[in-house]
Length: 580
Image (tube, rainbow, N blue to C red; front, side, top):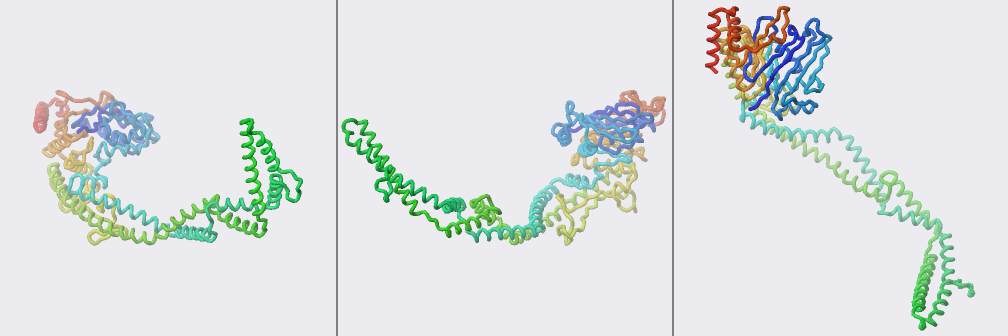
């Protein structure tokens, strides 16, 4: 499996460090050096890169700002890469470049992949990249949500199967609850909407409009309003075409056309072309007769009744009252009525729908309670195995009397689901709150691990937890500070052995003062001060061969050149290599 790797950090003007580069590698890296040399600044620097609090007191005296830059290689498609690219960051040959600047005045800036980003984004990425365990900076498994998630992954299918069933039921219940809440909380608004629709539909039903009726009435009103002029025009036109029966000498179009037709008919036999014209004039005569007849009928049928005109105008006024409210014309009004009737049916069905949803919600709630109970039982069984495994690890880490347990609890909530006769709060991951507890010695009450142990003990507890979880809750990089506080001898060897074991699944960086721990490292870095009390580029170097033996000798006896210390150092390295 390809994991993220913290390749290097450059630290400038931070604490005692003037300007230094810390080169790291996969596997187990130990950072050593004299007390006060600045080893812990490695942890502090990484904390800044991962969104930790910016303390202006960290800025080196006389400097305007402290700068930490880091390079982390990340596999393509990893969550951290996706999130960084969403923020506009660019990768440098498959690596994320992170920088953090802290001014002496307390201002802080963060950059990711060449882009300025909020510090909170670095903290977000940290959850997937690094687990830091130090005296004052504990992350990762100290978060309750992560403790529950890690326990679930440790349990495997025993929890994954009921959790998947629970998640499906939870999503269905939430969807039903949201719909039910929408209907019930908007009951007043929906009732008002229904009343408005009923009023409008009743108003339209009382008028009973027909499709296109407003256009028809507009034409009729126009005709009735000009009945006298229309009648006079039709009569005059009829007289012009058919003649005036009261004036025998009047000339009309039909008579003139008939005369022209007779004149051509008399000679059409002598010329076919003239015969064709005669036929066309005959057709004109027929057309004039038809038009004259229709004009006569129009004049006779024209109704000039003022009562009818008043009735038409009254009907138009009723239709106009509807179009002002419900549509541009009668057809639009009828369309509104059709939509509103469908909507009213939906609203009137709310009471029935509320009953259906309530029944469905109660059934899903009962189902969810049963699934939550099964999930709790599976977690409780896994928690016993996990607690026993961590307790066994602690016995070899100079904490032989410490006991780790896991508290799985629920919170009472009248709006929750019923589990085991209690109504408790629930969420997408079940009803359980999971917390690791530690009793450091017999007679001590179990307390949350962040409160039940000193700084050094806490780092050892976290080491034991990480070793147990290795492979089930992988974190690419682990960084420990003071993991070996207060221990030595055989216990120190066991700490080194377990750190090496943890490094098989990820990158491990340890700040240590114990040679037994450093001997197990794949790489050892030495942090040294210069004569002026600062750490420069030359003050952080990789130890190999003779240099590493000298440093281990110093750590063992305080004397780099002691033959006994050298022999012991060589023996430690040989033991560690044989163990690996």
